[in-house]
Length: 301
Length: 110
Image 1 (cartoon, chains in turn purple, yellow):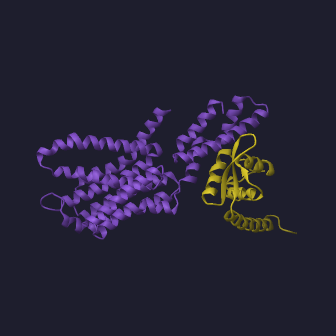
Image 2 (cartoon, rainbow over the protein chains, first blue to last red):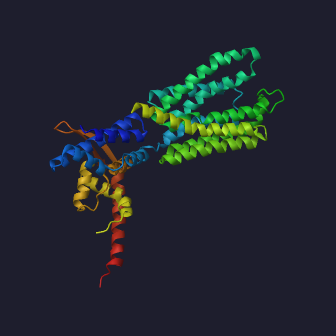
Image 3 (tube, rainbow over the protein chains, first blue to last red):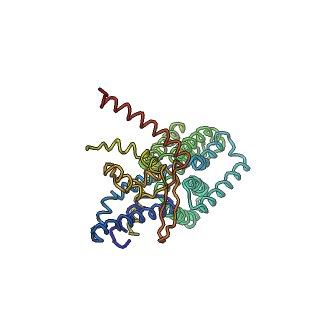
């Protein structure tokens, strides 16, 4: 294909597809052979190369519309992928609802599973279920940061010098890597984190010493489990839905609803400022990756 | 002849399955067949054919396979599957029943 506008047309379709690289390559290859055939026929009918190219683009239809329809044809995950994507949320729901969390054995099994599945998913070129597992891998990193608030005063330098820069680099790297596939998966990766922080604050403010107390984790266990169960159901539905706008709305609403649930069961322990900040964080999880993706793609083109 | 785009959109799957019961075809060939046989009635935007084909493929009603042609070109040919054949038979019955019923209303026998 020699005419620039046809290359631009295919690049536009690729821009809006947001599918895995192998799917994208195959779709572009197929459309490219169609365009070659059509241009060849139009040229045989007496059109110049430029006329044939512009007629071909008109006959193909809007690149954005074609890409959206192709996305919808490919975006529905299988039931196996749905189960795999919901599993980390379900594991955490069971961990708290059935009070498995005090057992070191269960924690080790879940951590091993998290690392194992994340590595397997990366090796499988990041299928749609991979991003849920990726998000839970960040929970130990997040908890380390939250626990740093309880270190003696002199140790704050450790957080400033080591934790904050390392975490910032890690989060940025994960976000950029995820955005290359689709910014929506970046929102999926980070979605459980505000919920975990909300429960951490609730449990922390339940005691007298302002330190997370195991007794209170036990007390709130069923509700913590319920919030992870809601996330599991939302992610399962997310994988099965075809329409992109429905996927975005579902994740956003489920994130906010889960925060409302935490605030309700926290019985005043999650203050209004914390609730407002966390709600803002949930919304930022959708806006920031979308803007970042736009900037990255704009720079690439 | 005026067209009902709603009717065309809702019958795209049946049209594609019906064509593929005859022989495996690639996208451009399908467009030409549809346009030629319907005398230009089924003349939709070419880019929208592929989402329909890929959706049918994801439902395992058809299967796409890349084939190398003698001239060195590669094309993705779509074959109908057993599941697609069963669905096509069902759709054909539904269409024939619908057409008969419609005809008996809008063109009643004297």
